[in-house]
Length: 382
Ligand SMILES: Cc1cc2nc3c(=O)[nH]c(=O)nc-3n(C[C@H](O)[C@H](O)[C@H](O)COP(=O)(O)OP(=O)(O)OC[C@H]3O[C@@H](n4cnc5c(N)ncnc54)[C@H](O)[C@@H]3O)c2cc1C
Image (cartoon, rainbow, N blue to C red; front, side, top):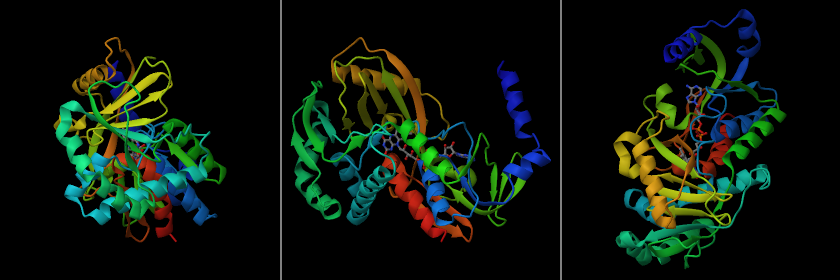
């Protein structure tokens, strides 16, 4: 069975396009957007608005985006205090807080295009949970919270962080910080809404076609071994960016996600960050979604291969059992997704040369910045 499947893939890879296929679907392309995640769709939408007569085509190698945009946790977030504190150890404060502001503006832009109802958006704040067994982190944040609030307020125009109570009955909790303005959404509904918006203004889609290589001098794409000339290329492949452009500073990072059976009495409608954002949870109805753990499995999860890491998933399940004080948790769904990280936490939004544009490295908060990055890319094409 596996052999048959593999041989089908290799036949497909070498399958020539017919004259008719080439004529209708691959000719006269003004903008080839590579990647059908939130950034690719936002870029396609804004470029089509910017160039109404252009033929804008999104190339996505799977049936839907198969990286992060439909595989994430659906947090509409801009930075928990311990994550921001950790960023401040590696980057200048201006960069950290301007990236935070970019996330906030990105969320506002997203909500200006897609209604809260359309993507099940709830803005009931986010919460960072500090556990007793990580007392050092909780004390470090306590000492820095006022300053973090003051610095954040310069960029957001409000102070986002305040201590609050553990209203959810989580076990082993030292303290809880509320993050004002954060929310949750349904990533599948968000991407579906973007697809509808793009299609409505004439953007075309080529799902199931992998771009094997770029000819940035052409410019052109190599698909199934065949060179396809296009006028402009816009690369939005995030964690996979180095497969096409090996020199970019984008490091893939895989994240595991689990969704339990219905174990809550009522939904939470809020998001929870733990340990600098390396573990996160929310509810989906009465189910709980938990994800992360990649800091404990760094070697295995530093990859762009979409695959499950059973050890990490076991860790996440045990973590959740302890946090909820439950033993009878059943995992109904599990999956992984690929993020694009780098030395800097900010995105790369770049015109590489005439006709070649790149919007990648969304980090862990691409739901927040993705729309904005797509819009900025379109400005480069003016
Ligand atoms: C498990 C997980 C949880 C996350 N949780 C959150 C969260 O709660 N909140 C938040 O803000 N962010 C979260 N993120 C990050 C966020 O999802 C990403 O930053 C964002 O979706 C990136 O969008 P993108 O469009 O840049 O990339 P992607 O969504 O990864 O899209 C890139 C697309 O390019 C396609 N592609 C790649 N190579 C090729 C090729 N050669 N030819 C054709 N197509 C190609 C891929 O199939 C993919 O669909 C999470 C990420 C993961 C993995």
